[in-house]
Every structure is written in structure tokens, then in C-alpha cells.
Length: 333
Picture 1 (cartoon, helix red, strand yellow):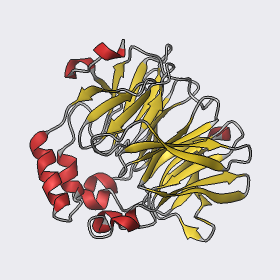
Picture 2: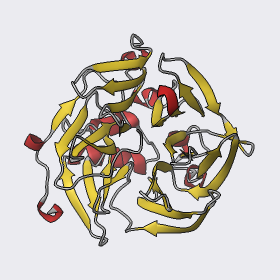
Picture 3: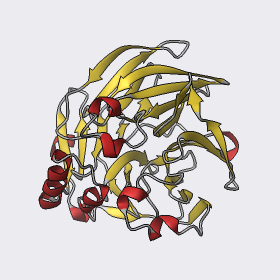
């Protein structure tokens, strides 16, 4: 079924309007679509109503014309977990910490260091069935985009934090820009996208949360990866920003390209800048397609779990399409 699946522009519609960097998307138990937003968070209800939680009137992000500053400064919510009583636990990518947002938009610090290590670029947060929080920190280098060409070893310093009650500890280290993370349905394995490794890495989860048996899951992809999600057939759907691609890593280990809206000339210009030692997000933003807007995350929703939502780091809407395969149920009730 997936072998014949390939998205065209006509197959994609968009939800949300006027969003600001909806990089990460998740589906709640009531069917609402949640997305991070430079102003806080956006909730798009099943009836289409859109609510901004946080600072809905803040225009500082859209007024900033330099995408390098847009992508680095400010609170900048990225990955998040829907918690109890309507709270949101999220990675404040630009503020070097994990935060809690109350339903009324109030923000407080949830975690700002672990084992004496600063959370320089926190990226993703996942809550498991035991109420523990798994957190990826992409790199210890806060200004990584400026340093990646000259000092790649410093950038490849990502790690995973487990917060169990009041105890936080590093449970995996030395990751090549740790990005999205997820647990499998049985929570036996923990998966993380290594963006600069262009691969998925997984660990076996021990009872106390210790991660063991690090291994690459599947092949090394052609180009960096960002977010991913599982479907009910144990396939993994993977996003590739800049390349503007969606891939599926099948349970058999095959890689299927199910969408490709790349801009070859813009991508070549960005590539030349990287080779010259400059990771310029202004050039990266030019690679974004009208269809996907820089795809960075993926989530399944709808009554049959066949509606796919794709987060967009450079867009102001969320791409959506119908999948031939249902996703796994949302983990947030």
C-alpha cells in the first residue's frame, strides 16, 4: 500500500492560520491539534477554532526580518508534552531551559540544568506512561550554527535527560544534534533523531529509565532528518527540512520517499554557504516549499488516525494529508 503512495501538491491541505514557527505538532486525546508557536502554543480544535495560549498579541517574531535571529533568540517553544491539568511542559529552545506553561499562559521554569550541565539548546520533550519526562538537548553549543563548520565535534554533543519526579539525570550522551524523540508503544525502546548523523538511534529502556544498547535504527538517510512518528504497521515517518521531503522507513528496512517538494537551486545555494563555513538560516528558509514549509515534525490524528499533520519551522500553517496507514493513538489523553 505504501509502495504506491506519493504526495502531490493537490493531496495537501493546510490547517491553522497566521501561526508563528509551528515547528512541533501533537494531537491531544480530544482530537485537538497542538503546535508550538513563537507566542506560546496554538490549539486548533476539531471544529477548526484556533486559540493562541501565551502572548497572542506579541509581534516581535514576525517583525524580525533576520531569520538567523528568529531561529535563535527568544523563548522559542519547540518540542512539548501535554501534561496534567492542561499544563504544557516544553523545551524553550532559545531560553536554555525546560518550562511549564499553565492553561492561562503563565510560564515557569521546570528544569534548567542537569548534573551541572546547562541545557544549551533543549529540543524535545516526551512524557511516558509512568509520568516521567524524556528530554533531548540538541547540543551543548548555544551558538552552534555559527560554529558547526569550524567545530563540528562541539556541535555533536547532544544528550538525553530523564526527569523522574524531582530527579533529573543524563541517560545518553554524545548525540549528533539530538532532535525529536519518541518511545515505542510498549515503551521498551527510546528513539531519537540525530539530525547531523542523518539517522535514527534507539536504546533499550530499563525499568529504572537507564538507556542501554545504543544502536542505529535503519540506514543513514540522504540528508539531515528532524522529526518522526510511528504508524500501526511499525513504519516510521520521517521529516527532512530544507530538502522538503517526507520519508517512510518501513518495518522491513526499506526507505520510501513519499513527498519531495525540494527547490534545487535554493538548496544548492544553501549547500554552498555551508561548505564555506556559514550555516545561514536566511538561505535555509528559501528552501521551504509552499506545501510543507520546512517539515520538522509529524503526527497522526482524525477519527481513523489516518490524517497526518506536519509541523513547519518556516511556515505559518500546518500541512495535512491522508495516509493509507493509520498512526498509533495519541499518547496524551
